[in-house]
Image 1: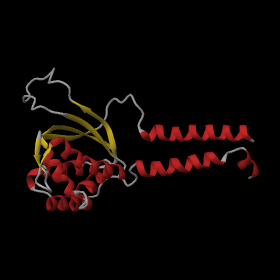
Image 2: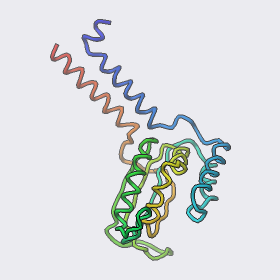
Image 3: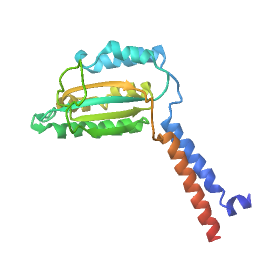
Length: 213
């Protein structure tokens, strides 16, 4: 036991504990949604938002096909130039209204193991398109990682989060979103690189402890 402390092996125990905490938060360990959960979430969604805001049939099918894995939501957004603030009624730039929404959304998403995978500003029109509607003037493209479909539904029906949706709909002139799963990914996900960072930190710390002994 004395060698455990003198040789600095305890830092690896700390790294393993930190990794367990991180993966416990970042990975969905509860599996797929049950039919009871699906019905409960759909009822809450119907009660909390106008019918024209969501395609309930599409959402229901997506939940019923849950495999328990993470997914990435693609979002295309066209922001209004300005609109009345949902709370004050004061004419406000659309970008400011969107920021009011995203500041709440990002905190709620992160708390449930989600995060932006990529967010980009559009810098040109369609350069390759056929049999599609004209470019409405998209401003933002975003990919948001969700830990699970359960977490997505927890977020959208959370009564503490519902007021933020008013800023979302005030800020967006047009938008559409659909879930995706990466086919090719050339970067490591946090589930892979965060444990490696903890391991590197443990190795460096152990070396420093041995050098100072």
